[in-house]
Length: 137
Image 1 (spheres, rainbow, N blue to C red):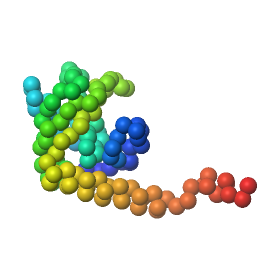
Image 2 (image 1 turned 60 degrees about the vertical axis):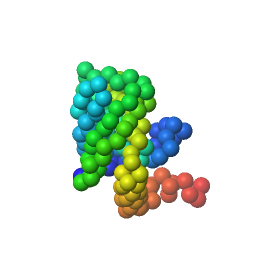
Image 3 (image 1 turned 180 degrees about the vertical axis):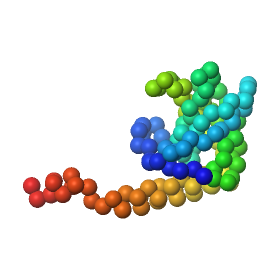
Image 4 (image 1 turned 45 degrees about the horizontal axis):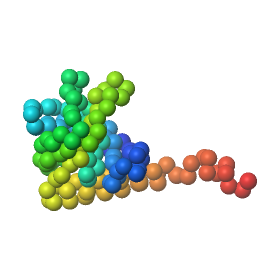
């Protein structure tokens, strides 16, 4: 099961879809020149953020096939490497995914459900203290 930590708000101009960060990374297998096991750390309906093994470098524009589980559904789709970097000692990459319509719809439905859960959690927190200190001044 995928557990979502929060909604990613970085780089809003670069992203078409909301991306959610996962509490527990999931495994993904990339196939192209070789098979690579890596961890998905955030996901959207059109892309994945990955942490790769230290010895793996992906080329920008490289076409790969990925296989991963969205809850109990297996998703296999073509991908394109859109960015890669080393950050905080980790080898990271961003992939644009090109799922079949059935899988894309399932991913979007899942993302919407996760966003609703996050909104419910925020509502339970109530009004933040700083909002009270700003009113009436």
